[in-house]
Length: 122
Image: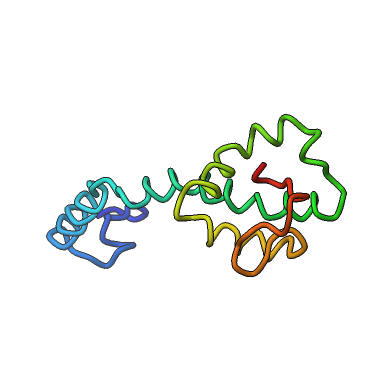
């Protein structure tokens, strides 16, 4: 080999046979199967964030910074949350979560405290 010309094994320290095995391993690594759990996670992430966003809205309504009854866009946006709270088995967990944010509107069992409650399940 001439001075200045380098073989591929100069940097890797591997001979030709070891390099071919190494490239085969990399090609198998690149041919991974599709990760279904990652797809499912990314599909449910917006739904999870949507349900988590109801807590701060309930707090803002409870403190008087946001009046849910006069804001039609907020009412429309949280209609699915309202349905899940009122008509599914998620009533207690969602209500307990809302209690963490707005304890004056929701009791510790997840039920509403009186009729003055609007947010975000009206």
